Length: 482
Image (cartoon, rainbow, N blue to C red; front, top):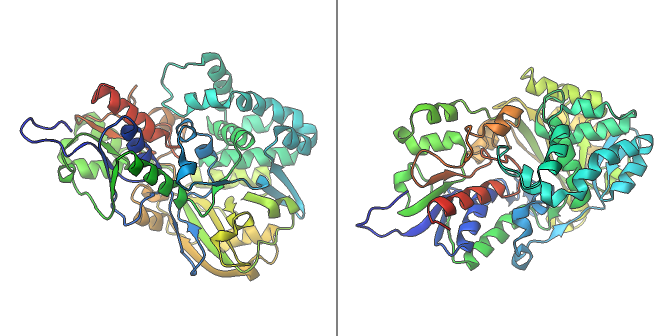
């Protein structure tokens, strides 16, 4: 927001929201020697990267995100000295396991060769799919972690990736002849919240699979809060300021500055801007689709989850959904029929397998969620536990306490999670391009000096900081002429 000539600016830039994208924007601006203030409505920073004792004293749970392949695989995070500020990544022995039946499971290992070998006759097909992305990860990450409409630096590599990524996941899954390989890819692609028949659903299977081989699927020692705390500490070392417990109702309440960056969803921006937004831009934000939500449970456990499959006992993340057909049916029910699946695909993390600091001695935690229609008030605790019990008989006997959050609860906890949508908006092909509007510079708003930098801007959801980074880079160029 451009200041008048009669009153000095209090800051060069103000960032609203301290989620990973807000902090990424603030760090990017502070590294350019600008004075930066971050204002956060909650008493604690972090947005989707927060940890709390949700169940019992001494059990530290991740409120939203738990496992972070895109953080370690992000060009923004790669360039930061966050290890100097207390961030330590833990890499499970097995990044991801997917139980099938009884003691049978398929797993994604850090080694592409080991994963391909374990898949058996589909190993060559799997390696052919993943290897080009694994070998060119850092160059391609720069390309797909930004607006889809851009001039690529590596056009040939991006085209090769794009021709596969734009396909429905079911098309690529048909290349596999065995159930384990098909199920593994289905679980990866289902992170898209899309039906596996939807265009571009394959992209998520390719990206998350390749990330597992390049950087793993790690989590921070002590919980996701450590990511936010490290970013905040680094920001303060650069001279940035953070104010918590400061809820902003209108843009006029912000301190005077030359630029404002908003780590908020379009719904929140409409509320902040009020009548200042009008016309087509306002209409686009009002019709922005947020996609499905989640139902989430955090568990305090007396013992580790008693998985029947050994790989599941050693994995950091477990995809609980059974066969390809079962995963596909669950996601189709949610995304196309807007209904509750009877056997939901469950994404589960078990941090204390590798980080005992998260629970009292000898105890454990688990984090699990499934996809539901946006805004759903349904209680799926029984369905989730039935799915886990199916592959880990005796699981219910391990439960000391549980904390549940439906989609509405999640939005009340974090206003950016509209309808419980954790990705900041639908990840279908339309909303990958039009996010939140069709523009070569989608971070820019019609208000002078005001930019959006939440997961509702490209490249979308995930703890990678790239939405905030790109928005800040645009503000540096347009406002500060850097």
